[in-house]
Length: 363
Image 1 (tube, rainbow, N blue to C red):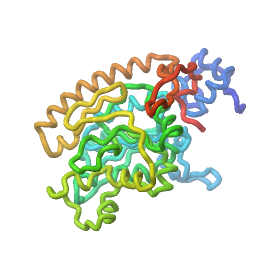
Image 2: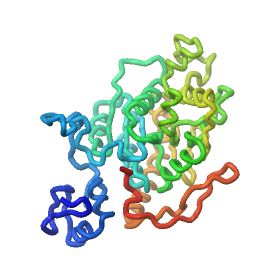
Image 3: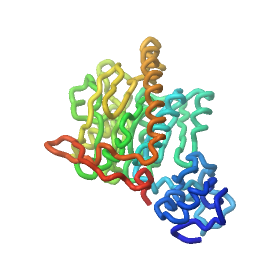
């Protein structure tokens, strides 16, 4: 087998790449090394993301076959970015969020962390598992604080992340810009190891300048260096608080993002903010469409949940239109080009059209 082209006998089913190749695709695979590499990575025309694979470690394999690496192609660590999504009881929204992420020009590996969905919803969420999507599940008997659920989910995401960058987002946050992840990675490399949206207003006085986990990119190498994390238990212990259950004398404390942000400040890391949000509204700008607090409304405030659900239904309809539009783009261009930083703000510069591998994970 050549390293630069397929050696199938002709058009039809390609056993190596697990797809059917038309005469046109067969010619491309024989003559174009860039297309060949796309098929090698599982990203070529005709290859479906949900190709069959087995969860690692593989059974019945010799050690030289490296069974711990699993059968998924590409491997999780061959992407540049991992997207982490905590979820609870919202499989319909999650499906759309995943479809949008898959169409980013820098396509991420995706980690879904279920935080206690009902069996019916969990079954649907687990059905989304594929070669580019892992589904993990927290089945807990109880926690001290409602923010323990997303904090534990994000700690798990940090622990299982196998890429240099991690993108934290929500199951009710729909991306509106196809180049968003690639631009955020570039800002992480050039400006700050933490790039994202500012935490929405809180009652504790130090929230300004903190990042939330709605839409935030982090450089995991930097996070590892400072021992970053999300644990409310760790946060409370640092301040001598043993029982950190909700207390009106400590409004919004502890909170999901506090430990991470305190550690960033202690280590002199200033997040680069690319957006701001308000509480209890639909936050919509050029980058995201976020139906804020839909899950907490589902659990604790049915009146608000019905309002947020209306936002979500409209947001999903608009997102599906974007998905259809993006899928019809045969050669997506990064219309905003490269992201530069001038006077402390992200601006765009013209870019050359990407190669066919522009949306592929890096080796």
